[in-house]
Image (tube, rainbow, N blue to C red; front, side):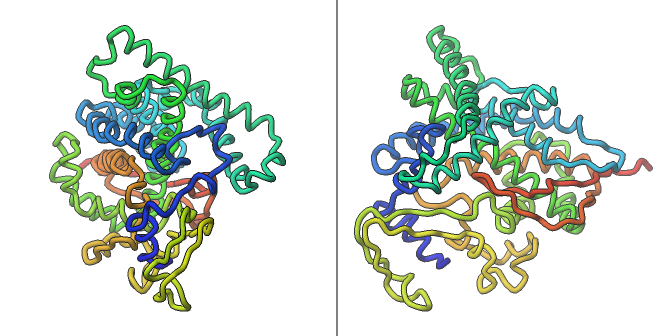
Length: 404
């Protein structure tokens, strides 16, 4: 994929491209949320979400809301070198942090291995069933006759509706401003329409949950196969091991940031984004055999952007582009070659949230464990829903420092 075309579609000629028609089919579960809208309707939903993200993700670091859940996670990690699949734990962590981040009420999945299962099973099935509905298109969508999908979608929406109702009650009773930072309360400052808030919360919940959980799993998958990278991270983190983990502190860790960037590059959560041309345009490049000629697009044409090919392009990233090597970021300064969260006005508003949760959790592990080993000889194998994760999880063993 030509990075220049990605820039044109995402930013330079943003107003010429939309998503509504090609994302038709998500309405039952996702409603009129920002991920499926364009134009003024998209802009109004985006304004409802974006400022709240900036307030909440930093607030939850500073008031220890995130730290509380990470501490509970650490209590479940064995310290005797036994094998553990970290992915289910990261799923439970992200359920707790996402539910508290959005609704101010944790699901407490880390405190009970069963309390979250009904919701999570419904959530996954609803996600999986939405994709074929989109692919079938408006004319063939009637072929998707799955009562379980509707039932599970209703379970997800019912979960959200209960919390919207409680947030409205808090606001009506004057207790919303209680020092607890909640995304839903920030949204209710702008609109009190229950359906709007419901679907905006649903549009946020999926990236808030999937983004951190999958990134953490992928990071441990790669780091467990790269002991040198783990040791380098420890050397960077340990001099400040007694400091409170704040957003400002996390931003000072250069190799940590490079590790998270490299994780997104080698194993992106999303690998494909499409945009539909909504009015005729000629892009300056992207046409011809080598992509350097102008590219004519008429209304209705679809541009498909495959990030995996761009993120593994050896002409830019080097001959070792298929390898996990955080050091490459010391020399490379990508722009549109690196778009794991999209770009331009539609860039994922939660990318800082994902960084904060992933970085905080990694630092906590690095402070406790001296060594990390892989306990899985299988390669990274893609499992596809609305996002991409490793089919085999993150099976590792962790070792604290030996007592002298």
